[in-house]
Length: 149
Image 1: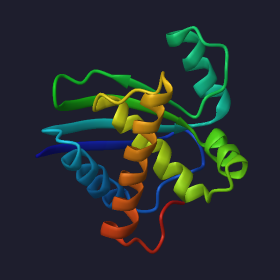
Image 2: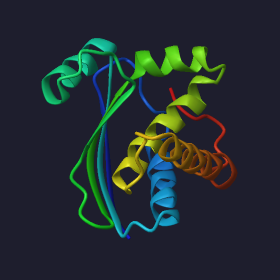
Image 3: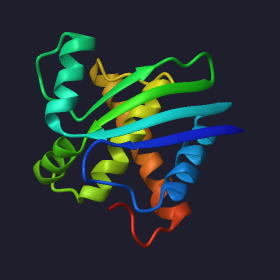
């Protein structure tokens, strides 16, 4: 499988082991039958992601992730923007660790590129189960000792 993953940091946050995340994203892509992945994942604050949300989607709300999906068939090509501020807030809101919430959000973006949606209750349930499968891949197969920053 051809794999390219770029991590872009517009905040003080950074992933401690980019190779680990690249291997994990590759494992998720293989599990869901992608043939290649080309991802740019940008980490930013609430204000920066809000500005993208308004400019590109005409949504005047805060969000944790925006996926700009240019995938063709099973070839995943996307720019993913993540608000580190929202990930922290949602981790607290849902009683999750920051690390697990970040893994969930990243997998959510990838899954959108693989054809998953979250508009209906049924779609949300399928997305959640698939996120959980990706999270399990991270924890069980990757066995990291230090997830993120």
